[in-house]
View 1 (cartoon, rainbow over the protein chains, first blue to last red):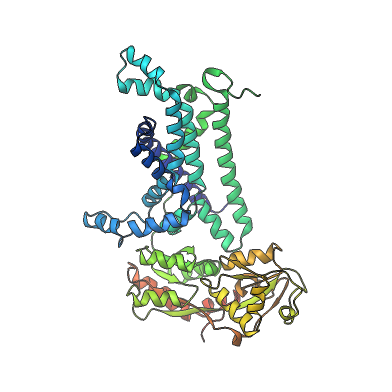
View 2 (cartoon, rainbow over the protein chains, first blue to last red):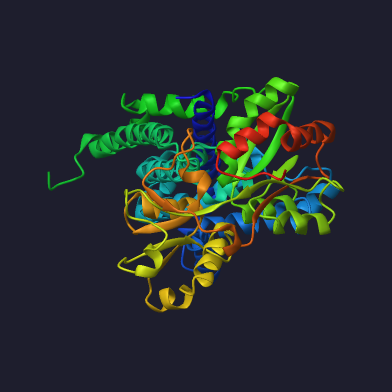
Length: 230
Length: 261
């Protein structure tokens, strides 16, 4: 495989890893709050969070470009406070990917937190565990599989992302050209051999990762098998 | 979470995540020109780049996309030095918006449209009129210059409205997709770019028909230097080379385009 392809692969992996890490960090409190009840605001935010699923990726990328570009409303404000527009940079890719993969992190986390039920947290409270303590020592370990699902979905979804990164990244080799865009370049120039090699590498990496994660989750909590039909 | 971290199967995954998150990307070379290039010319530009690097010492970094998408990105401040469009309209529009260097626009290649099938003997001059086929592929005339040319050819032959009525025309999103329709045998033949089907020795695979140039308006592919370019001198050196160097013209012609003489 050519050096440019390896660089593109590396950019994809970094993008997926950083996006996933940041999303887990930001979405945990959000999902926790969403799982706390069914108020009107929560339902509204829940729906807003799912919106990136509805928009076609290139359309999402287009609006980000219009909003955050140097001449866009948000980009201009950024420029006035001395910040360069994030479009066509790796930072821009991270921002776009976070938006694009947002529902894939929020929803599994919210479901996992909802499935906890109030009982274990109440028991912990009677044992004088502080709210933070309850969250980190009771809620998070019990929701571990939700975190794992969220991480896997976000990583895989970002790895295969195309429309958003092409639009807001600009296909710049060594900077914003991810593996999926390098595959597009090969396909556009009818170099199907190179396209196949890079696609196969991407698939093998993703498969190994998913296999590793699912092997672990199949073992279930405390070694108990979860899939009873086996 | 803890039992997951303890499981040995998780370690490689964690390691990969950490490595990916915290190591710097490989560094790129120093003096470089960012070229926004219409996807149909990417392969040719990749052949031109080493020659230009040899002649000037500057590196070309191609960013490929559809012409419309690249146009949008440029109007939103994309950091490109030169734009190699697949049409003349978009560079003109950028020029009228004051986004290009004055006097930098020129036609670097003129496209040729060809009716093509990967099967030998499937396409000849009379094939279109004779009928006996299910689908003809063309690129979307609304946004692809080769699609517009195909529509003009079919109109000149007096076949456009009838083929549409009979639902025999399948429309690809780009000229690449249109080529794929034919190459995969999903349509009987497609109007594609000569640059897609010409071999290095000048021959063409399968069978084809070259419509006379009089049947469609020339597919001028124009280049401009963007006024936001921080490398204007190097960009001018590149466009001058692209326009005048005999070796550049030879590669462009061998790739299935005509050039201004």
